[in-house]
Amino acid sequence: MLLIRIGAGLLAVTGAGFGISCVIGLRSLITTGDIAFIYGYPTYGRGHFERYGIPSTVPLLFAFLAVCVLELVAAWLLWGGRVSGGVLALALVPVGAVFWWGFDLPFPPVLVAVSTLLILIGWRTLA
Image (cartoon, rainbow, N blue to C red):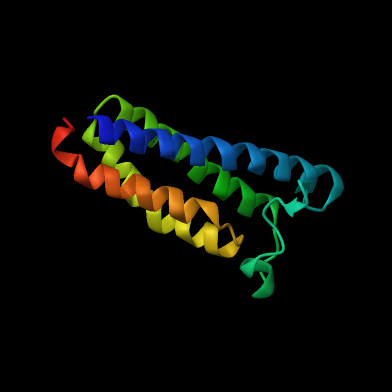
C-alpha cells in the first residue's frame, strides 16, 4: 500500500501544481486576453499547440484544468486503496499526455511515469 500512496501523492502534486497554474493562466487569459507568466515561464502557451495553429483558449485551459482535477480525484481514491482510483489514473495518462506535449510541459511526464509504475507494482493491494 505504501507504493500506491506514494503514487497517489505524485498524482496529487501534479494535479494541484498544474491545476493552480492553470487557474492563474485562465484568469489572465480571461482578463487580459493573453497568458500569464510564472517565474518567466508561460502558463500554458507558446508550446506545440500554438506551433500547430491551436492557440491557448479558455476552453482549452478549462479542459486541462478538468484533467488536473480528475488527477486529484484519482489520487484521493488511490489513497483510500480503491481500484477505481487506479483505473482513473491510468485512463488519464494518454489524455494528460496530449496536454503535456501541447503545452510543452517537461515535469508531468516524469512524475506521472513514476506514479504509473508505482500504481502498477502495487495494484494487488487495491480493493
